[in-house]
Length: 327
Length: 259
Ligand SMILES: Nc1ncnc2c1ncn2[C@@H]1O[C@H](COP(=O)(O)OP(=O)(O)OP(=O)(O)O)[C@@H](O)[C@H]1O
Ligand SMILES: [Mg+2]
Image (cartoon, rainbow over the protein chains, first blue to last red):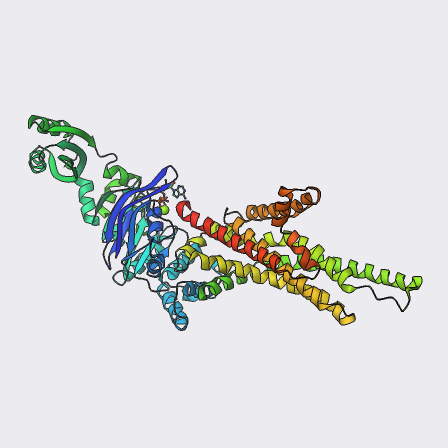
């Protein structure tokens, strides 16, 4: 439903998103997890057509967002970081305006407004001015706005940010209820949130995808691995097999291959520095060792930058051990 | 078209749900009223004096068009709109950028041009309301005298075109910033500059002066002021509107690169 290939976005000299690729299947709920400034919002803005990509392609429901923006936008509902509401409009006026510009047929506007108001629990404030609503209600109006044209794809940028615990739980339930009928991408920097709402998670840091998988898989990696990147020249299969046999190594995955040069991602048991052993294994087999490094920030370091406190969860979730338990 | 109307309606609604519409209408009405009163008073005094000096019954009455309507529309109003148009245009894009609603507009299935035209038409509608208010005063002259309607229509058409040109440029300035005040001040400064540029040409001569004079927004009003509709003036103002819309479109497109 959503295909992102080689997406790069620069703002002048700053590289906000760097060569990001992923796909989201129909009906799937994908979470973007990353610390502040990771590039979550930027990626979402490109998917929704608000920003143009510097490089790479994005397709929504088969339509390229640059070449056929109107078709892609018709199928996308978007809740930006700050709900894009006009404070001087009432909720009904606002939803009617959004319905019109989203191309909802005139006859259906009234029923659509009623449906989304119901779904997002704003029926009791429909005649109030949006500027006078609480933050939580404004967020729900923002969500109602994203749903008004019943889009196939929903892009939600930090949908629970700034809400109180009760509202967070309600919003998550709402999102889970939307899964299946809509393909959803949501972002958060709150770690426990992804496990509550998402089937699959992309961990993004400094514009790059650093891990992906189900929340369970990520927990597993978080608990068990230390990652080393190793580039060498030689026969790929043999090298991989040899590296696998180094003591302390759990898993070896090829990452890039160019000519006879291969980069492996080596996961080692926690607390083992396997770099010396890996180097020896390569050199003794008379292959050429080109590069060996720990993979920048480890997944755990990135996770530590995330907000681990879950407002919707009660007080005792802020320490690291419980984080691991929750994910 | 449906989209353009939706955006235009939203803009017009926003003007009347904020102090802006009432502010510009009040300022317009007050200035117009003040000058209307003083021109009319002068007119009355002058015509009594002519009669008293024995011009008598035979002399033609002083023209209402020349002594009241023309100075009001071609003199006072062309300056008043330099101040009021920035108040109308400053919020068009700046406010959407500040509140983040620009993200809604740019991610909806609308073309940029539809949004721009909608905003322009919404602003134009408010401006047309202002110009229409002129008739509240001038209508008084028609009730109690018989001024000539033809030059008045040319002057009103000129005001609409002149205003449209300023609105399009003001809208462009409003895309530069998320601060309405900045957008408004820049528009006012530029309009003022364009206005005084005209004085320079009065003293200068030669090529440069000709070019400036041709490009002067005020110069092209001269024929309308005299009550003459010259197609080349109409084309000039329409071209400026098109230019303003084009520049706005380019500026909005640039937002997508580094919003
Ligand atoms: N309009 C812009 N101009 C310049 N740099 C920008 C712009 N927008 C984003 N950036 C930069 O791009 C990087 C990614 O920002 P982005 O907003 O996508 O992060 P994020 O993951 O959404 O963070 P947060 O969790 O704080 O919302 C940051 O370094 C940011 O400073
Ligand atoms: Mg963000």
